[in-house]
Image (cartoon, rainbow, N blue to C red; front, side):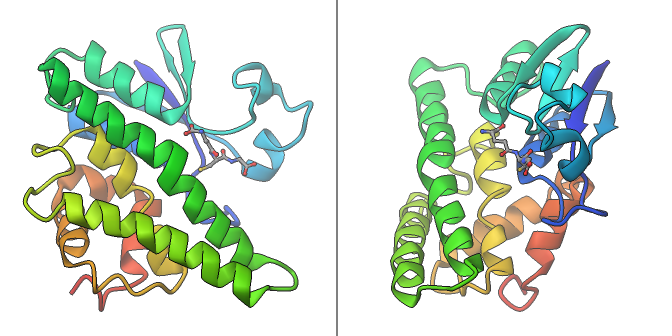
Length: 219
Ligand SMILES: N[C@@H](CCC(=O)N[C@@H](CS)C(=O)NCC(=O)O)C(=O)O
């Protein structure tokens, strides 16, 4: 049985891990049995000598243990689960369709997520710099615009539901916690509502809470 190293919402200063929530949702979507190893961000991840760093030297979640096979990096884990569980449709079979899923998965990790973190840290700075916040906000909203356009004529990022939606869908709703208004991005809002309606997503309390942070926008 797969074991997922996870930081849950309760008791975590940041409301839990969105990256380990991606894996939790993928396991739920696949219908795979799994166990959870709960970690504390402050006690198990951050200390340089924490035992967990022998499992994941980065001191971050997620990591999975699949019968002794240890794997970290959320995107790599999503790909592994989609590829190794033959019955899933979370990754298309067609080479070009697979490449498009990889494209959006990589874009989430290297472009969207860093732009969100830039905004988060600009907003949380001890002495906030309004110009820096405005620039970070413009960059992040520019990325949301790209995703909104992609969703204009399809229900999910690559047509049918895939691991790209899991990665993107665990990150975009953090916007609500930052007080951003996503209502101009109508396709994005419709897509978040579709994700929220999938039973697997209700198991990821951190993502549920992010989505609930703006009931009005998702009404
Ligand atoms: N690139 C990594 C990033 C993982 C990551 O940053 N995880 C955060 C939680 S979302 C974490 O464990 N942080 C530990 C900390 O804040 O000390 C992945 O996608 O797996």
